[in-house]
Length: 229
Image (cartoon, rainbow, N blue to C red):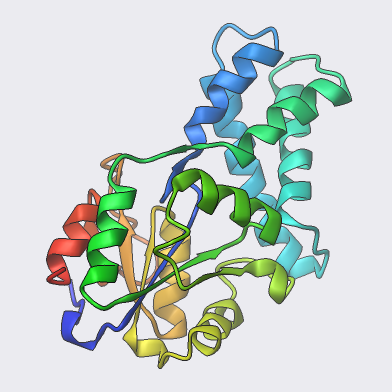
């Protein structure tokens, strides 16, 4: 690991799977769809959503992350043979405005803020999604702001989005530590010049492809420890 704590002045956080738990959509799937096991549908939904963002970048076919999520949900339900009408799908999709926050978020961001780090969210989510996410996570008082892919109409891991974040925060890009549970997000940040921190909440194996993260932590409190907060 090559993280340079003394160089970090700003910390940016991804949102989904990093601050809030996207696996919480399983409860919504159970409530609104006739399924015995929502886990595989949830995985397909999330995977397809990520795939759509990557394809959208290459096809110059931008839609908001919420719209892409709607498309991905429709695909996931169909792929698993689940019949839901449009209203039911909207009910399931709306859970993205009320996802469960991870237990370590408030304490960790508070420690970083108290130690003098400027903290932001940098996410594929469109502004409306980020507003509800930050409010639900109860960290709006700790953040300097949120930075949405919608501002450039391009998704991670496009390097221009991370450079845009550096401009929005007024921070030299090498002084930003970007924290994400998504491996390709960390790699995008590193490629663009940020210090990348992989939040490996699930104990996943190391990615053999692409640049290594500058640090790996299992919980956000570990990041606060590493940065001396």
